[in-house]
Length: 257
DNA sequence: TATCGTCCCCC
DNA sequence: ATAAATGCGC
DNA sequence: GGGGGACGATATCGCATTTAT
Image (cartoon, rainbow, N blue to C red; front, top):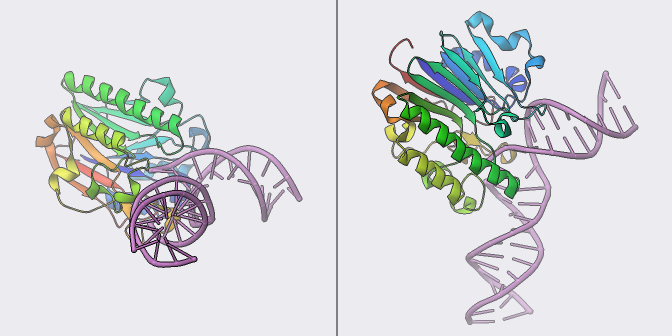
């Protein structure tokens, strides 16, 4: 089973920038998208990728053109849950959960904390509440996989300019400390585990042509509970795939499902 | 992200 | 119908 | 008076929406 996560920064926009071909290259069984910036009623046939064998499930925010997540599946799944169950978060369309066998697989667009104290508080509360949710599933014996746009670079190695971003949301101590806490609860940042010293990013600020100079951040992850580790075949970051200000990343597991 | 201006220290 | 202005991203 | 570092504000691009022309 190959799982891919990608913040597409507007699904309708990336549709005109080779999205279909990128999906064919990535060849995912489960494809989580963040920041689709669209609602169900705006769907068109070409977005569905029906002929590639996919079923599309969306969870949109109330506000048009804002946030929103989606998942394409082409394997049988037991259940797809839209939202976290916490209305305060679900009105913004940030969480999808796919249950397959023992797996609980989350595709999440964690909030951005850069527009004022209120949004930072919302982000931190979101972090804490979702960790509680992951823990309760793990406690019940589930294999928990969390992927998506975490909106935090964990360590200095995870962004090009750590010094000048110490006071920028995305590299604040409190945000980084939450990620450390997540790992301390028995979860693993799979890419960093396999590539301890690799300098690689998943997001580049489009305002300053940052991708040209590779002045980026690693803010998209696969974080899994420790009982998933024996099932992992490989984890990849597709730096060359264009169309969004983020690039996609994948996790391949043993077995058909 | 990169470039200003402001502030302040120290010569 | 097209253009300008707004909100958001981190 | 002026060099120079630390620090904060800000203009930048692109997507999608709403409002004006």
